[in-house]
Length: 115
Length: 113
Image 1 (cartoon, chains in turn orange, yellow):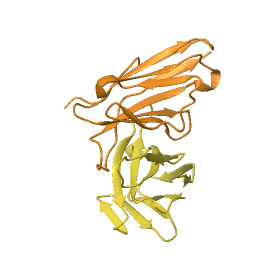
Image 2 (tube, one colour):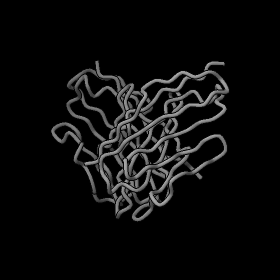
Image 3 (cartoon, one colour):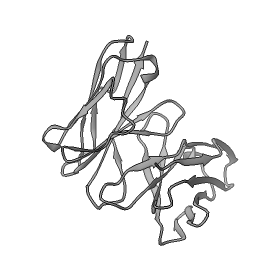
Image 4 (cartoon, helix red, strand yellow):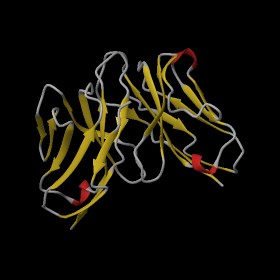
């Protein structure tokens, strides 16, 4: 079974530039999560999708971050304009869906460095 | 919303000794508590989990205990080995329609050979 795919693995940008990260979850997984992991900290939930609908985005800085999951499959997380404090690993995870409580399957992450 | 605290932030043990990591949570409605291990530069992976209807769960050298009254849970690793060196995250979630998983800040465990 293929795992969660993310790209790019690494990205270096200047502050005020924009960046986009892509995630393809495990086939058939209805729930998709984007987490931000700053060095030395635990993953922080940015947004959670159930199919193509948002169920939680309370921690997403909406003035600069946006995310979409068209057709309920893959997802894109965008940052525009980037700030220095956005330097982090952006982890995508998926799980089977509603009513399921168990393992989150994480991708390898996308490491963002903002200079 | 849910808040998960974890301590210690760093832990060093000699190979063969035991390691204990403790977590507390704030939302009494939380009833699912997973533990993830993250090796350097790699993705977090589930190592054990416990549901609120169980007080303890064990899997080989790893065990987790839960005290719902006190709202805390702990990870116990016995007979530690160098490959146990990693960052461990506890998390809390509510069994509901949508499984929002909130992570603690992590514990960096070093096992000294």
